[in-house]
Image (cartoon, rainbow, N blue to C red; front, top):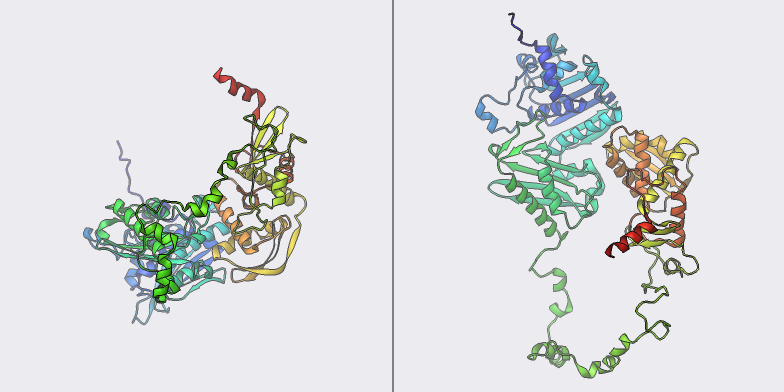
Length: 635
């Protein structure tokens, strides 16, 4: 019988390996940037065209390569990072597997120019589908320039599965940010289609965070720094007001390597548990320095999943470090026995306590009640007898109640509510006294007046019983269908702002909003690109309450990214769902009877009134027959 097992050719083996290492253009960006860092570069440029499908080029001023190394680096498992098996337990470089360049060369056309420091000429290598097409001497700058062109040109199926340019560019930006965040002492730049998105100068970690995430974080970062014999933790966490609905601004680095760890993320979430909403995610950029012997990074080819020899210790230490920093900067409550400087400046502390003041204080009833034995709980009858003699009046029946002798009154009882204003304070609306009056109007004249339950649900009577409506989910459905009609039929009206606002966004969000610009204008937003990731907000939809236009759009982006995980949903569908969620009446807002009735009328005028866009029920009905059956069960 003939032998059937054959050794695969190198180009086929490389393509198989490339399936794990190079999944999309962003994967190649990560590998090339990390190689530049390992080469000792201080200035690194990333050039992108057509979201990486046409070109991904990294230029660095590192050590460069010799003619032999320039050829050998594209071989499988060729690396300069490790020499023996013991080196696997002392890895301090970004790369070590020797698979990245071989995988890139297997699925793209690669051009390499490199020159070692001190050499007069460099080396040029051209590789196509793992085969060397050309190798010759060339004139080039010190360092290395590697260009990956026409990604997946020889794997059409893989190329067809790539997402839109905007989606792929967002992944590229994410990988760029992770490497740039890990090495603030290096200079990075990113150019996309001849437009520079990032130019990050050398600086401190805080300067790098602010340069990447935005200037508004400058005063909203809390420093974290804890040192032990086992590990060190340092970096920054955001104050509670920076928490978002998505996980975007969360970075863990172990020995300067970006990692993903839901276990360690849970430790940080626990530290923030009592100071941010349950559905929000805090900002953090945390670096963990630990002996490489305690870490196994050879778990996955992407090297973003690692194992620790003592995960429980890491969890406890990170949680403690974050909590300590939040308490140290007065973000959370802490036991602090040091005297507050503000207290020391008070007159009672700073000025002398004269003999006359001392004599007056010792004669006061309060002083005597605490200094005389068994007097701390006593009440001075001389001062309070006049107030206590009418205590029985508190329990007398109401003289105006015609049913004073009965246990229950059939007359609706009006709650006593304190006077409040209608202005919104930090997103928590309050009702006016007139709104409360309208809400508690006598139901004897109209038995169908809706009632609000716990400022979250609307109870309305129907012929067969009653329905309980979730006010937020119902308003979400109403807005969703309104936005659908605007995109399909008539654009929504725009309320022009008296003073246009400037909206400065991170590059990833700027690219996202640029893609949605036409649909946003149809839905009533008047946005105009202003260059350098900046937009001018001239107007918002007329049905949105007036407020901070910038915050409204930022919240919309967060909601959009929150929905982006859903499969088989178009960008336009995600947009109108996000707008409906962002602009819906929140739970906790007091509504007048007229407002509740409008919600009911508009909800049942919708084409699908019983389901919110996200799949949540908008109302539940209760029948009289079911209620009667429930009350009769005890018989």
